[in-house]
Image (cartoon, rainbow, N blue to C red; front, side):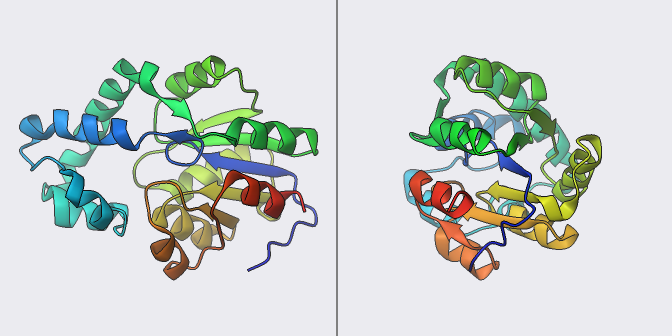
Length: 212
């Protein structure tokens, strides 16, 4: 599926799983919090199946905890994430993608469910420049994208969102933002395609789709 690049002015990147590789850290934090929230820890054999699930399916099938506890789990996860942030690294090639997009005239921003201060500190650690950083919750990503567009004075038609999850695809469809999914993150390629997203398998392919 081709992206219509005419009049595009900004690229908004999801952070975890798109720009940075957090799969090992996700498993570490998830398992560290398992006793506190009384769910079963993840095993290596669980990962392929997890990659097929959207966020709500993951909570319903794997966590099996009430939705009202999700907000506490999210807060605790952010705390543990920040404590371990020195272990987080960029996916190879993604710093160069961001640099070339900015050099090509795009405004480049980040939307993350992690605290903006944590993301800002990591961006500085990576010596990477972006134009804005916004925060979302585990759920309500469509609302967070709308809020970001309003704050940054961006028209829906002028933006492409780049993410790695089915919930990214669903949020962008809900508000009419063009979306491109990367296949090296949380959800597998087949699930992203079934959700209706065009995909990129490598940073080089991603860049070629955005700067043809």
